[in-house]
Length: 601
Image (tube, rainbow, N blue to C red; front, side, top):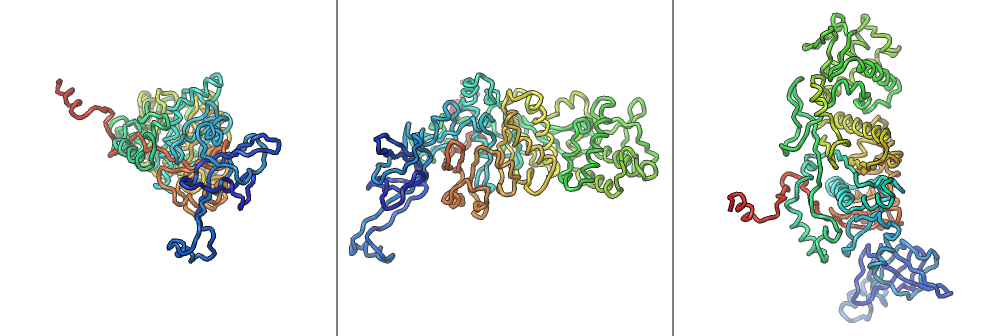
């Protein structure tokens, strides 16, 4: 019953727990009160504090006498509720003595605003009592809001694992089809959704299409430990299966110019496609700014980058093929000449490596005309600025050279160009963990820029989910870069184009505010307690911020617009392998049955 010794307000109240009953944090409850005219008002809320204490004693040491039976006292078992919904919206306080009950069935739907979500509800996980926690897809797909942001300590908060679970739930729950049908097929939530995942840590995501050999054991233990009525995938209405229609892309192994293009991975030998860009693409598609992580730190340097970008784009219009052809590289005036200079049939220099391209740019800026440079390239910039530009290019040369090739045939160029949208795959995993920091920034920036431009031209007929960890690296709060500009465009305008960012980071306080604030869905795993007190986490009540420091893997706090307070959920162990050692057989028959088939018995 609602307590009369504590204030009861329209937004929070305390209630006593009856003898033999049990209430824990995050339980959802409902209480009905009546207005003076007799009309009922229901309050739905979330338990955010539970306490027990002795009544009838004064001193703390009295507990020993109470336990010994010397001093009479009773135990008060009470819980505090944060109201999540009032129906109808008559904001009167509940009456002391009103009966409080666990919210189940229709009451639970009201408490979680599932009735407002209608066909847009899909499973975000399970509540503590095994009931489904719904998430409103219309606040994910860009219709009413968009983007998901996940914070937590690396390795403990399992940010990527939860992002993958959400994708599995979106793709396999049928919510995309339901929303598309409801909206006449015109909304972003269509059945043709795709996902792009950037793998930045190890090779854990290269086995998403393989079943997890440990999932049955893990889910069996979870069911027994938590006292659930069934295994968690069945409770959620999701198949315990790996992802389907997945392509895996990886950068090529470093080698000499002209070497074979093979993916730079160690654990998976088959099913991984290497990706490269041609030098002509680098120039024509204006990829030069993404080779600089600090282009915006200097106005003069930014001016030089923009000028050289324009010059290279014009040069790329001359001829075809992977190499860049130039006729004004006077090798007799150059201070350093590449050893393997190639010429085309007309005598033009064929630039086939990134190092040669840098040498050509250096010639145009610092060596031509007896060290004065080409006036059209220099544009009165100081030699110091030009040298700083060349130094930065030389600094990233060894990192970007394997990704930029000018010696490819047209067939090879088409084969190894990363195709994330127009292929027949629903999910693309881009493995960049073997790349250095500058190369990772380059690949992520170029691919996201291409995605954004593609969606601007073709509209939002397919929703594209982009999963990117380490947002604090790609969009730091106190720095500017081309890739940060792309991420800001996606955060602020992407949902109108059907681009949804599922971003993750250890510390939201170090990520650009506009990227975090544009996320309609906020998720928090285990947090450092000092980080939890930062302003970025004020959407969490104080009790939740304190608990964020002790959350275990597989447990998340989820905040969404339909519910004014975050809700604690658990999600199942991955049904897809997250490392080579977890890869299981997709054949569920026994070893004897499989052996009999092999022997023809």
